[in-house]
Image (cartoon, rainbow, N blue to C red; front, side, top):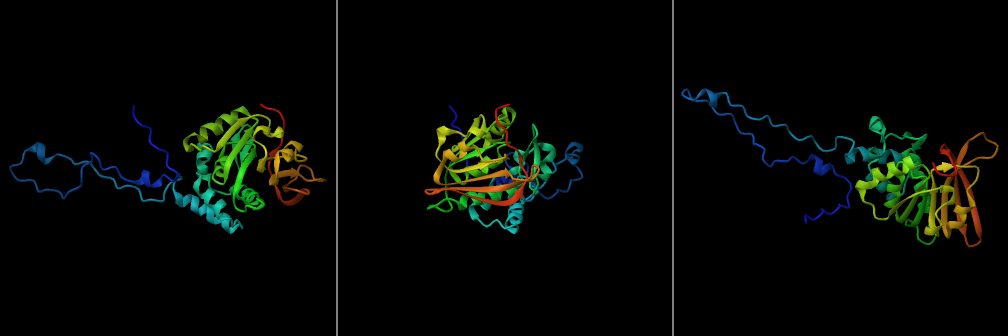
Amino acid sequence: MKQRPSFPARLDTTLAKNRPNTVGKPVATPAKTVAPNATAASSVQKRPTLRPAPPPGHGMDSSAVRNRMVQKLAGQGITDAQVLGAMGTIERHRFVDSALVNQAYEDTSLPIGLGQTISKPGVVSRMLELLLKGQLGNPGKLGRVLEIGTGCGYQAAVLSLLATEVYSIERLRGLHDKARDNLRHLRLANLHLLFGDGMAGYVKGAPYAGIIAAAGGEAVPQAWVDQLAVGGRLVAPVVTAGASGAQALLVLDKTPHGVRQSLLEAVHFVPLKSGIG
């Protein structure tokens, strides 16, 4: 039985794609002068045209494209090296529709179907950095994390590089299936995709060191607070009071003395909904 090749830890495949395959290909040599008595067949014989391999760093799957995005994120104020490294590793263009691939590394949200979107890289990195900063007693390292709203699976993939274990729940079957297909090639053993009502969280995986949500409601569901470990942090958009649908980023820390909340900058996410579809 043929052994399955091991999956590389490094996700950048640019080198392999740009390495020319020389097996069985002719090697270019200087043209020979045809002797006067050479046969007609030999004088008209054509050599295959050899095309040089494309230079490295071109195409959506190149590290150069992702590095440019990371530089922009750093310019926006993202400083955590782990977050920047994870953002530079996961290929965002693999999680968007083919018609939108050219916009994959721009700092913009993009539609992923069923009325949902993939968040801006700037917002994803901001929320992940906030989540990392909240790890009391163990800064810079995430334990078990719950993600509400898998979407296309992009943020879940980035999270898997920052946390020991990730549970990601999606209420829409179509998106759950799409995320599973998008993530299959990465073979992330510490990432678990769940289909269900995200407002109820996932009690079987609790308590969580971190909870992050990709949809905003009037308030944070009590189930999320209950499933958050003491010393853990929750980052989610919420609808701000007195504003018509306007949202802001909420950071909730669960301490031994109770819950502490901070309301940060304005954001725009899809509405938080209950049930499955």
